Length: 240
View 1 (cartoon, rainbow, N blue to C red):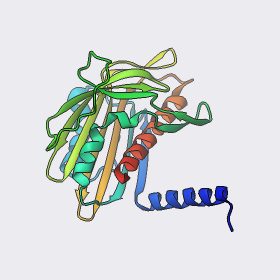
View 2: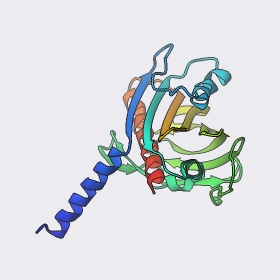
View 3: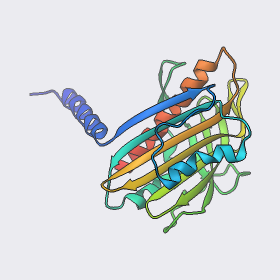
């Protein structure tokens, strides 16, 4: 018979295998490239809208661009579930990522919670209202393990079979003593689309990041690790 510790390890591996079997994903990253062409963007109205935010508000191209897409099993209450997850900022608190700098798993967001307005740092309950979230704007406070604390603005768009969450940093983000990203220069957009018997998650990150040769690789690795962590967070919450 298997020892209890061995059984536990087998169960963990089996659960991980089952979880990965539920979704397939791809990721593409561009850094300091010109005329970047998005290659993973699903052909849906809100996914196409996601790529327009930057060009509508910025004159220069983003320094960092990354996109990822995942497919999920469709659940009976999928759209309601997605709406709840996209407003539950407090569930991001404590999620982990692998730090290439420290060579170990670290807590990505020691603090993350909803706030009532961009000038506040006081936590309030996550929005739990019912119905469409189209046109809603929320704010949340997030302490990042590498980039420090910042307030984010979250805008929502919802159609019959898609929900989009567009996030922008409202304060500067620093990498050590270096201001890596100025306010309103990090865009992270999540779009979830209901497509027949599956759900598709598309995440687009665009940022104007300071370019310093000595820390370039750390900044890119940090952003990629966060993209992985955010997609993993969403997938985990979706399967609950």
